[in-house]
Length: 65
Image (cartoon, rainbow, N blue to C red; front, top):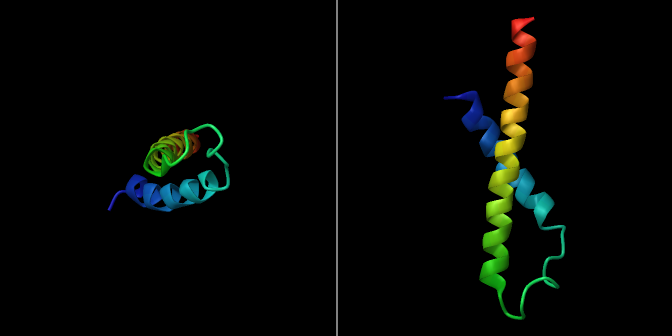
């Protein structure tokens, strides 16, 4: 199993947990729950992608030293 896949499985729920602390209800129209949840999921996947790639770059850089 790839270390990246393990990191994604760790950081996607973590970033969803972080995103749920924001209050995006004021930005969206009333009764648009599905759009808000879709945005949370998309931003969480994007955030976890950035975090995992950052950590893998650090790991690769350190392993070259």
